[in-house]
Image (cartoon, rainbow, N blue to C red; front, side, top):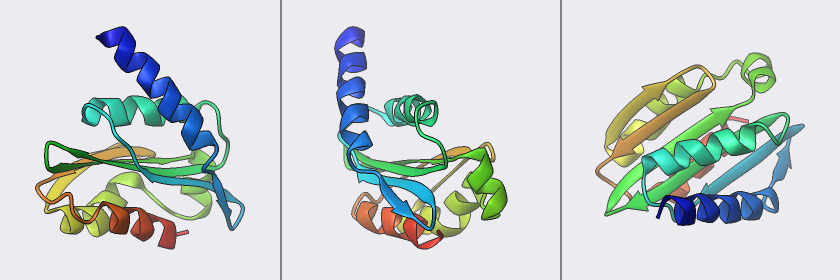
Length: 129
């Protein structure tokens, strides 16, 4: 099962590469993905971090009716745009998903009770660029 899950993440990662948008010089990926859990979102974020420079990424998933969100910021984008992932979670994401979260300056995750606003979550992060 673990090998199948790992292969699935690689397939999702490869498909996300094709969905990169360039916004104000920043590579942006915002996508609702189908993964097994919040840990998979985090792993996926870390996989892409190593492959794409100047990246801002927000991945969201509906996991058993609950929202899971991962936000990843490249160090240079975090500095130049004065963005911090936990602050984005607290101020912009948590209210939309009726939840909370946190993390490090460039990688934060959130969980919430309401998975109906996942597209709006992505748009909110995109609007910060």
